[in-house]
Image (tube, rainbow, N blue to C red; front, top):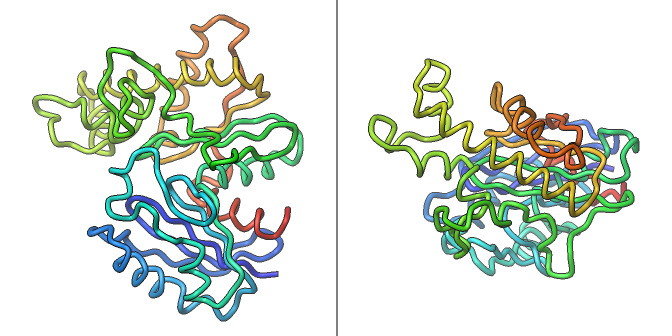
Length: 289
């Protein structure tokens, strides 16, 4: 059974053919349309999947945002631009003529990482730290999505009541501080206007402000992990995303988590499937695994 898996992110769109052994046979990428209009996204998706759809039996989508009854929504509308209420499942059905399902990308990634652990952990949490901060929760071997698709949106839990305003409208969300966007937004002086990738590079060159921003992010994430342990009693937390997988970042999170009381400690692990976790998790869910 071959699945056409699609990953819709804020900066790129990816598609791949995934077989029943979870092997990627082909993969294509395109930038997410800058205009973020329904027409532009539909055209980009059509160009992305056209060379692959004839080899698949169904479509599985992992997308940023909230997926509710096949429609794309978001806690933070700024992340979607003009794509709020985009009929994601219906669009791909029309483009491919194939049965289609969709799930939040971090929820999909959580399911892939649970699969990678080989059933060793029935209770695990996945956290992605990238442009934003997202998550997925597996409880007693089952993926939690929630009645409205909201489950696992851990980046919108409170980190600092006096912190920056988040795009969702709350003040001091984890995402507003720990994410790549949050790191960049807090940069001042010589780092003002730099993106998170540049700030990580400058930290490696000894820039003290860059180092402080990254430590601030890691400390915030460690506190989130402690909160997650308290609310789910998970056995393991898997960390992914471009920031989460950046060199040295997970070690910093472990350092700050070690400063929390022992009851909140939990094993941390880097994502096994790296940046393909969303694609593979969506394929697994579509295949019924």
